[in-house]
Image 1 (cartoon, helix red, strand yellow):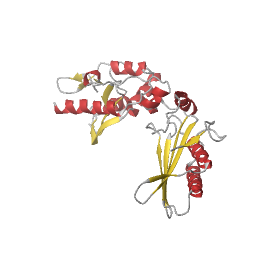
Image 2 (cartoon, helix red, strand yellow; image 1 turned 90 degrees about the vertical axis):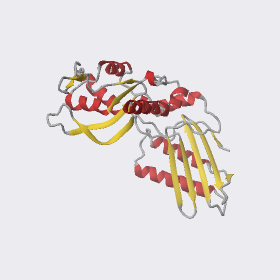
Image 3 (cartoon, helix red, strand yellow; image 1 turned 60 degrees about the vertical axis):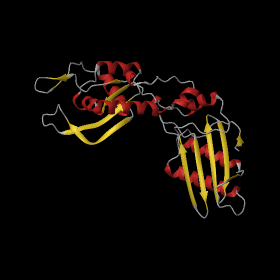
Image 4 (cartoon, helix red, strand yellow; image 1 turned 120 degrees about the horizontal axis):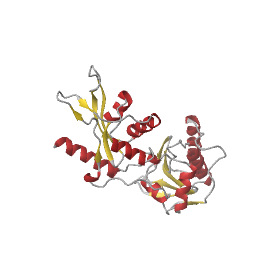
Length: 290
């Protein structure tokens, strides 16, 4: 069972994300000491789970018996406060902060801490949806770093991903080839103010397939092998890493429909869930095997 943790304002008076690596380690050590001071004599192993979103918190601890059975134990409220300070201090701009942590201690001096910032914690009691919205206000994330479960509960609308192969569009690097096999394109240049935004979108989208080595640059007079052999997806489109490469290296714009799609999304990558990634992989592998 979790110990009740009353809602509170974000821990500490410092802005979020001010703990450096040493500060984080110091805080983790303080949490460990607080846990140990709460335990009965003769303990051998303990697991403490802290979950938080917005100002909602849950704290649960259990002693681990030799046979693996968990025995609930109460730890001092100070442990919850220290976890809250650590969470606040570990915020990263555009990435957010973690929403659950598991601290394991074993005698004589072994410990580990696991942080989770992407998956919905296994709550003892589902927090009010207002707390998910508060999380995104207190610890803002870039759109592509907002998991679907957090976006849904926080009232954030994210573009829907394709759910069938027919819905996924695939971008081509070139428009075709001429009679001797040289690449042909018939595309306008990107406006200067959009070039870097489009490039960031193309290169930061999740990589779903990658091969070792590099392909030949077909616009390089020497044909040097510098083109990444990767595929990316945003859940609606699939494109080779070469699309971003040729934009960066040769100012070759992606095909017009893909550029239009990126503009419609205001150059913001959505969160791409596992189902969308697996679908994109299946489309690519089916194409390669056909």
